[in-house]
Length: 324
Image (cartoon, rainbow, N blue to C red; front, top):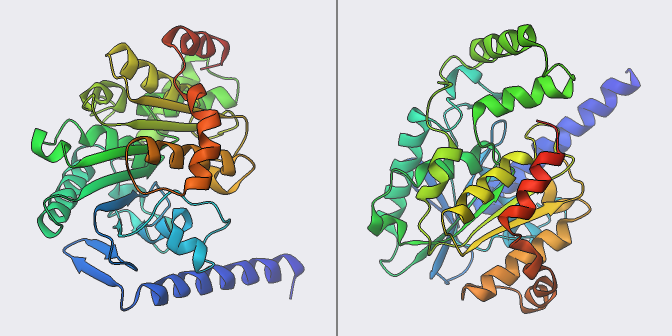
């Protein structure tokens, strides 16, 4: 067999084994209700940890961010930011071929309704005093922001923290980033062509639809929220998270945090070079807001946490220095 084909077949077999192991792990510990799944390996039920996957991901990937995944060798590293009970689900675009672009609107109307219903279903089956930490990556992080505009105050009050990794602030800026990487952001023809191609690929996306940059100020000021992004993100420009954080603090949100990492691939930050720092800061936040945490990690995170609330002036300077 061709060497490259052999390596590819080997990687696919490993991924299949990993997925099977995740499913096997969940057996006997998983409950389902409509579209959501809840994995529980302990009797602790004071806080539920919801994972919202990105485009090309799956809900079961939550194990890669979780303590359950670490102790069962299902995570790419020993870093974790989610405990259990773990709550996850698949968006309708999930399919064997990564994702179906015709079944996503990138966190807009249809997917927002889907997420809102899943959130309501979760509230209906958990204890009234239980809190919820919501973590999302890329599209998952963006739609969490949009969701805040659709929840009632009573529903918002159940949220203990938002962890938002690499969100986009507007779909137009996703397009601008792509053409910017080709150094064609000056070219009006390329901008028109890229927008047309984007809408052909994602026919359900409304360029003027719900956008995180508009809805981020709907996050209640008492909810702690942290944005995590890498300077080397090739898919979503880091200015997206900078703008979202800036908009929040301009609106008087005192519990907003921003972690900027020097490197790391999109949606893989936790298990790359700066993963330990990412992990430690999340645990420091958990400790600060009276959530379950690892004391050793939280202590390490405190040394970095004071750097995670930069001024708006500082953020604006960073935005100006970064292309598109």
